[in-house]
Picture 1: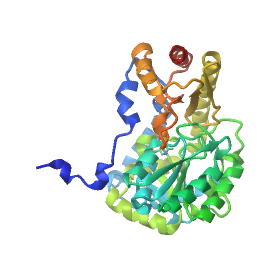
Picture 2 (picture 1 turned 180 degrees about the horizontal axis):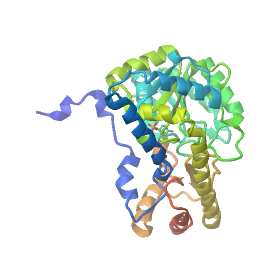
Picture 3 (picture 1 turned 90 degrees about the horizontal axis):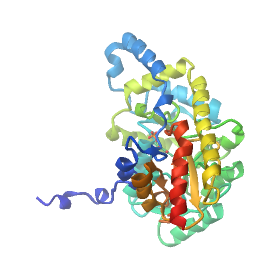
Picture 4 (picture 1 turned 45 degrees about the vertical axis):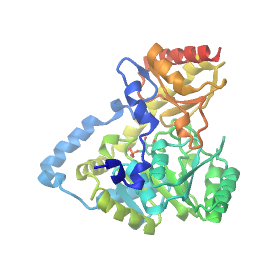
Length: 405
Ligand SMILES: Cc1ncc(COP(=O)(O)O)c(C=O)c1O
């Protein structure tokens, strides 16, 4: 049997991201890795989660391991709604809220529910690969939009929406990460958030706002700036998503989506066949964590942990890289973005870095849907020990200096 002929057209376009392919290379035990973008496992509240787990098993017995409803545990949905309103200024009804098994699943369902082949999706340059891959899997036409210091370049967005429409594509989604973006660590200002709602309304396109890192802000931020687009006036054209992955632990696989109820209902239908339900155990662990009111003090610790690492990284960059590159000063999240002054391709540089210096980063180009960005790289400060930050950046700088000669 010719198995290739059996593969569906949708599956034929699926491909593994370059980052996944690089996992083996960058995660070797003796390599100082600025590549690993996962939250640091030291920050997972495992003692508190163990305590809750033991209490839940005693109280619920087998029920803890049973299937649950597709849309998510009703009490957890209420707790998420309450926290969304109190912390993020997002008011939404129960019908507008659904829990999913990670925001990655949410992205897949959003793509499944909204995209037909050839529909245009607009993303930042650079953007999160997990999202662009989800949209590409449904054969969307990916269009990169330039960035300014304030966020997405809305003039460029408007031009590209109109151009896509003139070329016969239906502009469907604008996917954005306004807080401490993965990969760039960049944050949008308030005016750009508000203006995006208006552009999307005028051009009849939906916004997907991914707020995976919104709670991981460092001290000194103005909370008004961080308010999601979804909390602003007139944001009924916004599908908002966030996750417990960066505040508690990604292995729990629980996230949430808030959007127009007609779309949330379709996502629920996709979820019925996607997984029946999100893990009952994970949802109950999180619900109890919120009920015991542990999240706020835990987050204070998480923020301090990453901020310390980010400050150390800034100092090491100043020391070793100031004549070689430009970089940003993230106000939160796990990532920092570096643009080399010389046109050096960072993909071959990564191979040299691992082979010669036992240090790793992620080359920037895979985050650009237009194929640009080859002289950029993403540095994550989440999993490097404080002591290795300076050493690792000294090594990377040495390679860049050699390549620049
Ligand atoms: C911007 C962004 N969105 C979504 C995700 C996926 O998160 P989750 O663990 O909720 O699936 C990630 C993970 O790194 C991310 O960086």
